[in-house]
Image (cartoon, rainbow, N blue to C red):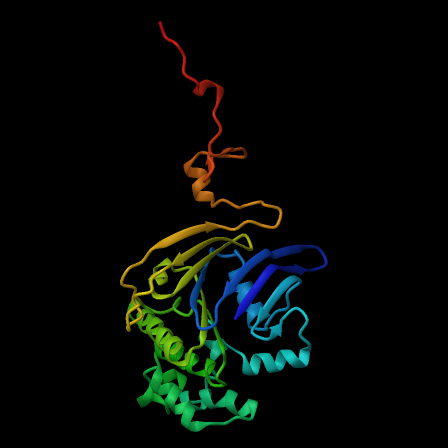
Length: 293
């Protein structure tokens, strides 16, 4: 569904140039539900904006389904955003129109695309647990209810891909669990591919896969291999493997926490035992054994 290879995004002004993504590689399968984690400034929201058609990549390759987002025209980009992708922001002010009811908010993108379907709009609100709140305006809904309206809106035009930027960042734990359960149900029943950007590691148990972004690159990938996913979307058995991504020159980026644990600064020793590559802190001269009288 998604393929990014060597993806680069550079923001330029008259006096400064910021590299938000520097050769990012990632692949997401059709129907997968995954999370992207990373600290502020790591590039995860930039990636989401590019996938959502809200920003243009500077270089590299990025494809979503049949669309090449590096070469897409402005007219094609409009069709892509209307038909292929749905987007949910953390800030509900960007998701919702305050003077409309919940139902009217869901119907609006349908009317703009020329495919109005009230029955489907009602069904979406029922799926997110708001069947009895369809005629309420935003000031009559809690923050969690507003976020669930936003989920319904994002699916109004039946997208193949759903992107969510910190969808649980401004709600309590109970509401967060409810929202993630809704995502899992939509993923399972509609087959929609879901990519969630978050800094919350606790979401790892609620998705199929977690990818970490550091400094604009997919430096580490946590793959959860659990074929025994139960009907509630909870993993019966979780096994996490951690990978370091190599670039085409054979360079790899080792997580900073590992280097600090080994007290590696700017140099490391490396050896190959026939099966594995072993990286260690370099031996110092005073580390060698000495004879004592």
